[in-house]
Structures are given as structure tokens and as C-alpha cells.
Length: 359
Image (cartoon, rainbow, N blue to C red; front, side):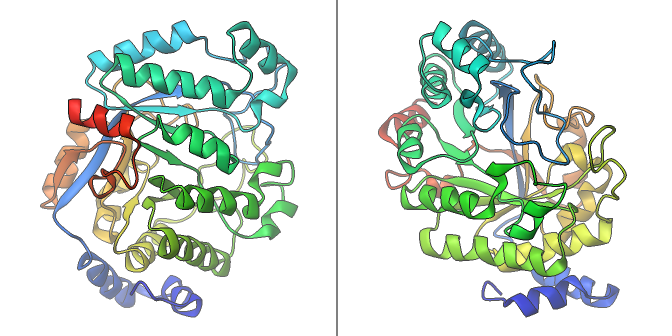
């Protein structure tokens, strides 16, 4: 099934109920075991400044806003990491607005702490995490140059960047018309460079932002091509758009349960060798259905910090996720931010391997 054509995928995305059930059954034959995994993490949004103004985002704030986090200070990050360590977290999820250090305010804040760029600051915090905690860094810093990815690989167990969609058409809509960093070619290039550098990588699609079924199919095939060539994609997130008050897409309907089931099933069929993930806080009532459709990972769940990108959606309790998975006959297990098959010297730096060994 990993050789599905675009026409095959579109046909599957248009299936009726009986064909859906058949495909769901086939998708489940690609499971390697009955384990459903998650990562116990802490969410560290280093700055809310971002050059992109996406039509669905509530995370970004301008430097003029009185409550904007221009830059989290090192002391604050260290304090949160210490608490995360006490909670038994094993993933430090570092993220920040793309191109933030292009803004004067962020540049000044970095200089006040002795850094010239966000990448340099991120490296320092990841290094601090490895030295003084039992957490492993996983960074989502947006589009990066190959040399920046190589620099960060030394101190990251894995990295990530959502493709969202490979269609350039969306750049002409309210979704991404003010978001230069969402140019699909730039995002594909970052994912490809991560492959060339053998960085375990998380990516995915955002469903329901105005894309067509054909564009969904093309996006999946683009990711399949990258993974065929480099073998570095460890998981694909199928994330459903959620309307929020005040955003340009406030009145756009979110994708239906049926649409999401079809997307998850097709992704599992196309990627039998990759984890398929959904954000559990955006899908609490539908977790069971998505597990039946082929999901085998529930992503990061934090006992300490909220989802700053979707603050209206609290993380579900682990006891709830465990009861849901066990009810279906699965077993819920915690994992590291890097999947087991990537824990070797081909994909991880000596520092990361040493840290994992010590854990």
C-alpha cells in the first residue's frame, strides 16, 4: 500500500461507509504491535513573535502588544525545566515564532542575554537541558538553513516542522497570504535537509484550511517521496483545523469526523513504516475512532504546561487516555521524543546517545 498513487488516495478519500470499514480493517493490519505511544513533555514557547500571520493562528503576537512574550529568559526556562524534571517528563518541546530574530525587539532581548540569534539561544537551552535534566530536546523552530539544522542536531533528539499542505495555491488565500514562511517549497526544503542530515523528524498535515482532496493527496505523496529517499520521518501528524474567535477563519467549519477518519486511514496505508499521530487535546471525544482508523501515537502530553498553540484545548488526563486505549485492547506506553529505531549513531549525535544511555 505504500505505493499508492494520487488517484488511489483520492478514490479512498471519496469512499462510502462500507469501503471505509474495509480500508480501516486493512490499515490495522499494518500495526506492528498493540502499543499506543505518547511522550510526556513540557512545552516551552521561547517567543510569541513571528514573521508569519496565518489565518488560523492565535499563538502569534506583535511586539506592540502589552502581553507579548518577546523572549523567555534563561532563568525562567531553567525553572520550568527543573519542574518538568520533577514531574518525570522526558521531552523538552522548544518552539518559537518563525524568523523572530528579524524583529528589533527580539534582537535586543537576545543581545541582553549574550546571544546573536534564536538558533544560538536554542542551542544553549538544549545543551542546558541535556546537562542538567533527564529530558531530551525536541525543537520546532520553523524553516531553517541546512547549516542551522546541522548545528542543532548535536543537541536535539528529534526535530519537527509541519508541512501543513504542499499546495502553493493556499499562499494566495487568507490562510497564508501574509505568511512567507509557509511557502511549501521552503518547508519541503527544510524537511529534505533534515533528511540529508539524518535528523529524526516529525511532520504532518493540517486538515480543513481550505485545501482540496487532491491537495491532501499530493501533500501525502510529497512526504512519502521524502521518506523514501531519506528514511528520517518518524511520525506524521494529521491535525484537524479548529476555528477560534478572532481569527480570519473564525467561521470556517472544521473537518468532519468522517474526513479525519479517511485521512488517518489513508496515511496509515501509505506509511506503514511511520507513526501516525493525532493531537489528543483537539480530539478527546474521538480518540477511540482515530485509534480504530490507524493512529498509533498520541503525541506530546504535558502534566505541567498547556498547549500554547491551542490554549483552549487542555491536555486529556493520562488515566483517560489509558482507559480509552485499554478499552480497545491496546496498551498505552510512554516513549522518548525519538523513536527506538532511530536510536543509533546514524541518526543521533554522540551527546544525545550518551544522554539516552544515562537515562
